[in-house]
Length: 173
Image (cartoon, rainbow, N blue to C red; front, side, top):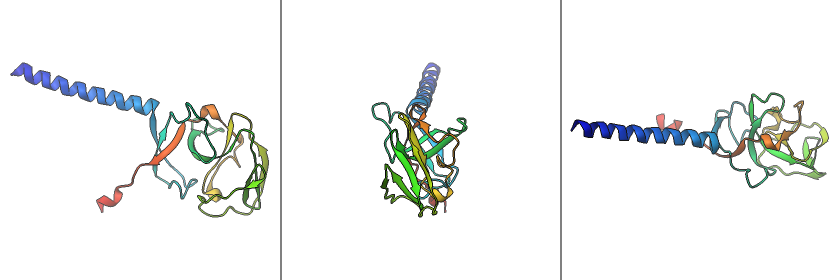
């Protein structure tokens, strides 16, 4: 009887150990979660949202325009940022009168919170292997337009944001 109880306890401990190990490995190599600290991506991602990011998104494919990605901030790589890819290597990025142009073509960005303030930026040419990032809340985003190092090295992109964790806080009311 005593041996059976000990075996049962050991089997449960083994199950918990395997589960914890798998969770840590998945978090380290497959998925990770970031909490968005600012409103720079509103209304797409709100302040405080928790976003799941897939680390393996770009193993077989390159990042594309429009992808929302997590990467180390180019001016201080100890800090992670989450922004939308606006330009890829070879693109010319310019803002004229608050309108975004990529390769001299005016972009229609239906995900923006509000129209950009009437200002100009660029033109800048995105080097091959690099990306130009901007937040969706253009009037409140500290993005590549103001960074000292304007471009993100593609090798430093940590993953693609794939979904927001649902907010169940309303259940507690």
